[in-house]
Image (cartoon, rainbow, N blue to C red; front, top):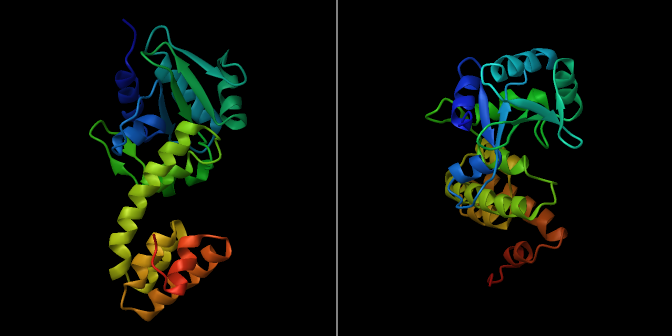
Length: 228
């Protein structure tokens, strides 16, 4: 029997920070859906060569593991791993109980974003980190995959639910910070219930922008019509 994904992740987290992304992270947020692989964002470190050395050292602990990159998931070793990290942003580990993609630069993020994303994470029991739902949704943007569209819809629903609870009581600076990250007509509607006139004005401004883009629900709120 080969090395389990759990064992490999445990080795990664012994000395390095690891953010779980992809399907495993979506499932951890409560979405009931299958996944056939594992995706993690390993601390990008200062240089791709250092990142590659860490990955090589850990893979060498477990017999039968190989490292691959795109196109075609060709096998790589040595300096090729660092090159793959720079050019593609990830490598794939084969030989585990399921394929594992290890990112240095996930979709829609750069290496420098790691610390900011980590600051919004929560710690998992196994030592890995679970990203904020919105950061996870961003990592799935522009993939043009149906399963990612479903994931984004679920994750944005979690964000919307939280924002709707926070905005009616948020002060102006808090409301601005929330709206900078995510806004739709429902969050604006929640902010309109805030007694602070500045927050109400922020909500109205965003509704105007959404209405101008053709959102019928924002238009209805601005006109005082009932939303179906």
